[in-house]
Length: 452
Image (cartoon, rainbow, N blue to C red):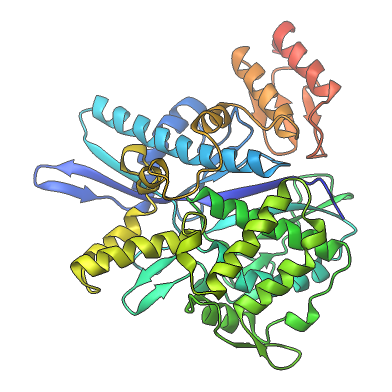
């Protein structure tokens, strides 16, 4: 069992760009929208994929989605700060893109949405990454996690308004299989593509792609922390065979439509179960691993399950995003009627990232949703890496290379000073934050002349 591991979140953002015309605002297509947003990046870096001074990565993903991947984090506090930093980075990038367009005589309005679904039914993801040992049995990990992930939306869904009822999750009805090696055609909950971004002899990367993007920080804390607890239980030998759904795709849809957590789905072994019962089983089995920062996660997890079981979800609305969103939509429905178009508009507005337009930021300032990391911590995470992982090495290298005006590149493992002979260092361990080889390379960038 890994008591210390790096974790990370990759967030694909929704993007809407409108350009002013003589007759009003014109919404541009996805490719043009992405080009407008990323113009400040491509102008400065001549690329649409860059590693940042905080150790994270900003890039355009398939489908012209802006995507931000957090740096490697070995604490939940760092992970929450890094995730919120991604929102701030996208907000500022959009502002710079609007200013650039204005300097050229064009009015542009950019909206950044931290959601997972558009009005046409297209879905994009929020992917979680957990470092595991190469000796881990991936099949056993996946089997042990499946029922947990099918039912996790009860505690970590972002919520979704539809004309025929509220849903716990935006992603759930786009998942079809428990495990697969691709991410688009089969839409699995766990992607098994072997891409560790680390020493492949020692490590694997567990790639979970079933989750909703979360703007309520307490929900992301619960989502990542509860998954870590379950992962530790499985690594320690706990088995959850009796809880496996007969069909994961069917089960996740049934759970998604029941806010009380009681909808029954068929189990592979025999009989049936429901989200509340399954989550209780995982919660109980992981209790002994709830140490350090995970103790608070385990306590909140139990409180959320108790509140839902007692039909008192409002008690945890500040911590669970789907409950907070439903509370807002219920209030609008009472005021304007359940068929009002205001509900769909509010559902979308919930996910707006831009600071002056962000509904979540207003709710957090009013104390209506949890804020786990301070504004100062987020501001630091925009420009600084976690200090205890490989991200610190990458960030120090990038900062030094930019300061020295070097021709350089960086990825998750490799740091390259292209204008120095033998200017390459490979960092295979994500948990290593100090490396004399990187320190020497940084010193060489400061002192050695460029190779011709």
